[in-house]
Length: 506
Image 1 (cartoon, rainbow, N blue to C red):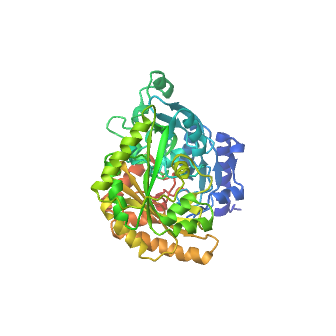
Image 2: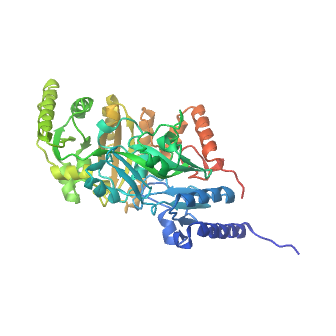
Image 3: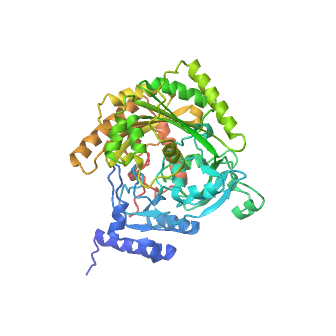
């Protein structure tokens, strides 16, 4: 008499095997299949839909990550690395796109390995958040190069890996900044270190002779950090990284200019950046500025209804005995630029609180500032050259959206610009959410068709962007994936790495 085992029974048996193996690696306390916990990682604030993972596992050592990835290759399950302890994940990049998947939660790996003031370098594990590190750096007279008012529970390392735009373009020399050296476990389970960390010798041996990990290039002519950055966890798991730091200014002064003509502000800002006269600088429309600065709907609406639509914020700073002299000559030079551009008419009656702006560019927030207005938002962002920004803003504004925030952030010494359009909405309104999704998709496609470069193509954007690339680009990217993650265990379904590429060994 034969024994009949159904497919469902096989899956249950396999899941139990995976559970025991993971518990042996990390301990049963750092493994969960609690339905509430699993549900948290099956959704985020985006429109992305996904599956519920089988387990969430919290490794605390690099060796545990190596073993987990090797186990995933052996037992054919997928692994999605997540670093931030925040519940405010937003872009769908950590949502399982298929079944038979575990979440590799790195939030317990939160050691600050070193703070090197002399070389202005920070070494941290992936679980270190902005809340963890900002005050510790301030004690040493240092500061992070960070995005505009980041959420405090966001992973600092993840922010750098995802190339989130920093607010000080004069310190942004390379598109990879502030990321430097990394230690990474590739999808094969193999450990590798990039840049000057590659060797020779162990990390302790290198540090003993004074290596500071400030050069991300290498080893040799190969710079694998560039393929790790922006890969959305699909090639490897970074276990520590070094990041650039800068000295903390002892004095800062905030300037706020307003205009109805964005081109005027762009021209002025372009000159400020070209001569490196300011530190932080960005442009916001009224609603976006209001959402950044205020916490109540009424306060936001009051500021949003200001007569002049566009706002240029820039900060100048100095440190040491000559800081006042530095600010004086900077203001003089900036005044000369205003005269040369014939922009003395720009309205400079600031509506903003100077200390609040300083807080937004140097601290973290407990709640995403883009959610201040309606409670929810969808952001459309891409990279643009200077000349096309007015065209893109007009294109998006032609949709006649009532609640639209616009954020323009120069990056890479002002050679490129991060353009962001925030669509605010009430997430509790199901009908509004559905309509907004269609609008979100339509605007994104229109921007792509008009040359907008989505350099961080999450979820839906990836499919649209790669359809616009040549076939050879996709072939090359998939070859890279095959080298570092041959069985497609790491975050399958993101970028151009489709689920069906995974070898079906079930």
